[in-house]
Image 1 (spheres, helix red, strand yellow):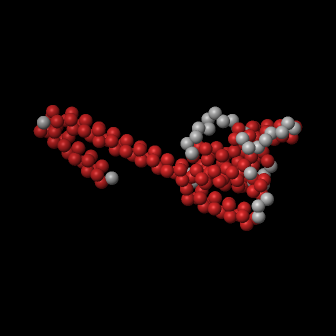
Image 2: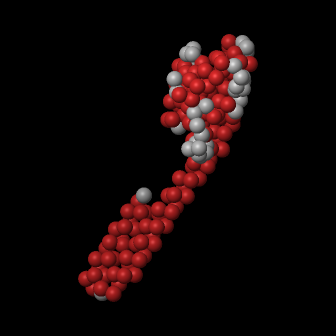
Image 3: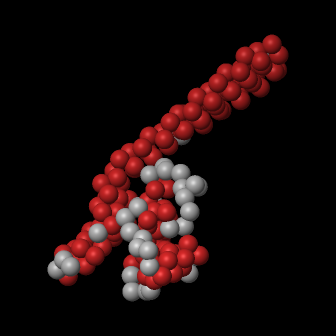
Length: 172
């Protein structure tokens, strides 16, 4: 930061000196200032992209564990209570330390909806999956409500299932 300030001060000083002493120097000094500004901006952008890449690599195993648990929630529910509690504590800590705000909010929303009627809890579950995908840099624009749930929850050809999917699609 100090280097950037020093560069700006030197450039401005040179610009003022150039205007006063030799106006022909103004063009090259202005061009140099623009090049330096572009280089700083580019470096900042590269650093941001690198941090995002590292975050994705770091969070991928956590998200895989979370999604596998969600996909097999019926099997997970059969595990001993202590094992279930340990999973929620560990996952909560990982998300607290490394998860972005939208994923944390979706996680909390899903946890609160676990005792709700199925369309509500599945809707919150899908919001969590969408937040995870978004954090991993995936585009969710083409997905419709219920698409992610259908990847692992089979739809039977019954009136009850059709009503459930209508409720999920409508957001109720």
